[in-house]
Image (cartoon, rainbow, N blue to C red; front, side):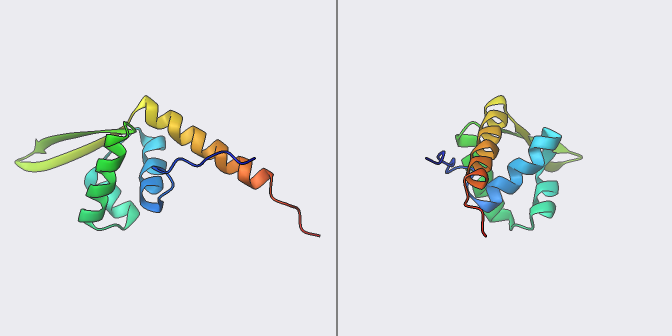
Length: 99
């Protein structure tokens, strides 16, 4: 039987965000925007979903009078990402070998 894939992480944009954060622990909104190629509106919605799931924390502040949004992966997010990767490995290992 296959392991269940986390529906929160089983979205290309949310998975991209988590993949970036897993190696950095935190990143600014504009960095994530640039690296994912998403629109501001779409990435905002996806960040909110990750925050609601407890996978990231979002901090809003200012830098030289400009809004600054920083995203940090949480311990729960690190665990969820690891479980997701393990589940994908399970899918890959159970695929039939072609002749």
